[in-house]
Image 1 (cartoon, helix red, strand yellow):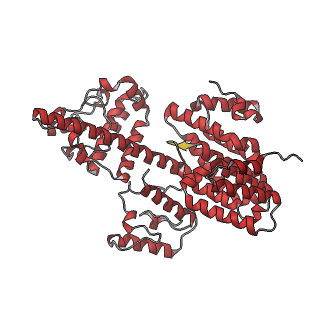
Image 2 (tube, chains in turn red, yellow):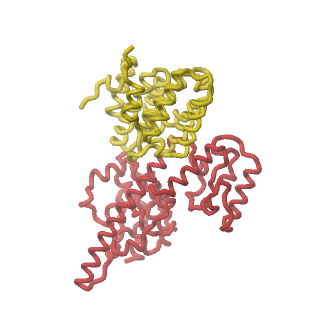
Image 3 (cartoon, helix red, strand yellow):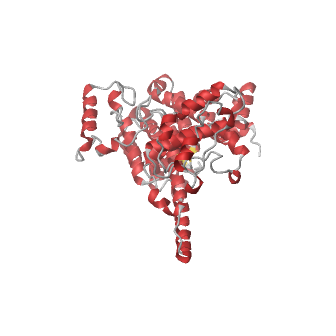
Length: 272
Length: 221
């Protein structure tokens, strides 16, 4: 783990330890600080000052962190604002953070390896590379973003459907477009693009739901989840499969009893 | 390899509970893990022997659950229960020194055993230090038992703790030096324990062989 994350975590803890207010951008909504004690108004003012002053690079948070520290992209309003105070969640978050860092190392190694072989091949055959060789420029490294994406992926993987899917279809049998593929959290995507990929991925996974209630309910869920308006706005870099295979994504048959619209089609047509 | 009941020191539980724990070790999805975590914590607070070893059974259940369904329900309940007790440790200490020392022993044992990706759980570092600092306060140093508890924990996890946060270890040892030098109410046993831990840390968390001889060999009377 890098030094700066250790440092930051220590500061996080020293905040809890010293009974000062939490560092999140949502702190000003909170009546109580991280340790449960009621916050005075002056604390709230400090938070406001910090929020308003984050554009001012010279403003420093009372415990010496730069003001911009408090404004990483967040997941939006959360029920327990900012840092989770309970140890269970802290350890889970810590674990996820480490897993993400470890994944990043592995991914980087894989990319570097691919880039190297691509360069060799290109040098000898004169062809231009694709896929992984350009991944290096396209790497998402923002920890907050990676953690959020990992959480979203975890929600999808933590389902019976996913369990059944991976048991039924081993990786080498997967057909692009037909079988759901986990979105690549290390690629740069816009927030909307990513969220849409996740949505569609989870919808596809529904095909492997355990056979409980069939029929209309399921269909409606699928349609709601899709929010078809958004589908029409999808940016072209969305598909996780290679560009040459942007064939229409087929959705599980039993959930396509809706008249007319085949949710997978618009995208296929757009990028075809 | 089957781990018998003795390995996890669960003989002190009644037979039904033993059966429950054994199932939790093998097949966590079959049991109510919140209940199991409470049983373990409750016993650790009562039973000094168990509090020293409960880390192992917790570790095994955590691993079993992770392997079985990637879950961490048990760990979450365990940690949150620990946190609850931590928040009220001062009251606990006032109510029962025995329970307090069992708690410290237990949380240090958990810190030792429950690692995340082979690293100690960061969330526990400060709470553990808080407990040890409490034991280093003058009123606690007066009790030989609390001093003994303190040095035992430092022997077991001191090195790891220092690696996780060296500044706080420095702070702790400031208190220990002060206590050793200035506190008059200390028993000679307490002083011996403190001197030993001071040397132990100074030696890089181990004693030289001569020091070891001084503190640990039987003196023929």
